[in-house]
Length: 179
Image 1: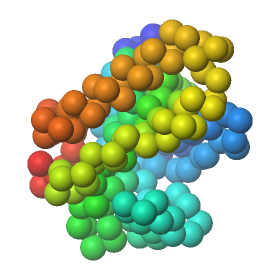
Image 2 (image 1 turned 60 degrees about the vertical axis):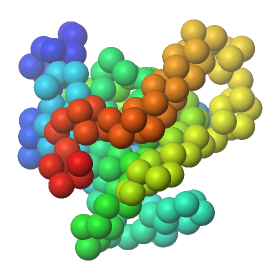
Image 3 (image 1 turned 180 degrees about the vertical axis):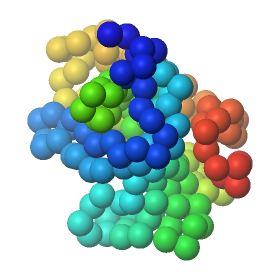
Image 4 (image 1 turned 120 degrees about the horizontal axis):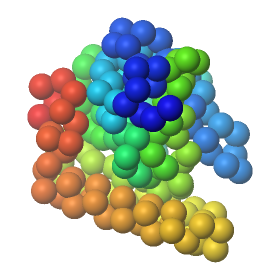
């Protein structure tokens, strides 16, 4: 079954389980609510899935934060708009990952994280490439050179979009106040 067939399109308002494959670390799974899915671009909303606050130095994720997460079946990244409990925009956290796999029958959305990330602050003044050392240590270059090239290309694309302030068109299902 391909991505555009009905069984693989998630229904807005329905529950979905997001699974982030973090090999060799344990996978992360959490419940989310489907906002939209056009067969290529799926958008879900979920509260911060961590059990405690996590301070990254440039942002802290904490209980009450709300993530609007954008996944594509044909792109090597996901983009997560992060808002505080009071609705204030914190920024966008982007994961470089293999294209999303949606299983409508089991109401699941799975992405394989490739250990590269990008952060764009709410004021758009800070663009940070993250975890490049983890990516190198992952051995992806040796195991799957084509995937490693896709990952680097995806990170470059996201950074270019962030620096041009072009996330708005990319995230066409996001709330209008985000742009």
